View (spheres, rainbow, N blue to C red):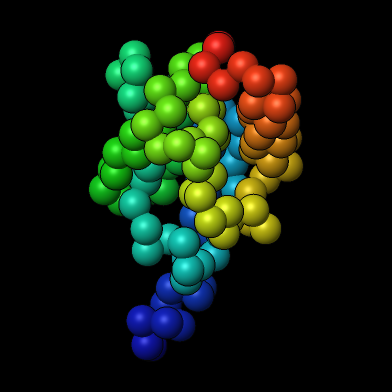
Length: 124
């Protein structure tokens, strides 16, 4: 049996999406899924240093992402910094996110767009 055959017969891996202390979603992916090679991600706020979100990949190392939480906007990363977003700036994972996480991201990005449009870039 090859490693690929063994892994393809393995049960799916359950990924968990947590935001603000609440599990928004889980998603099962095949053991050979391209994203499974990555690390679990912990999102820590630049302003208050709280851990406000994480994406848990079983049996993987943790990688810290310094991203403003939904309550803060340090504007350290200019326009790419959307407070409360767990998306990478490239947005490559949009097609694989669970619906509840997509809804979260829509609300976060919509609210930030409205806030910036109304000329209030630093308020929270």
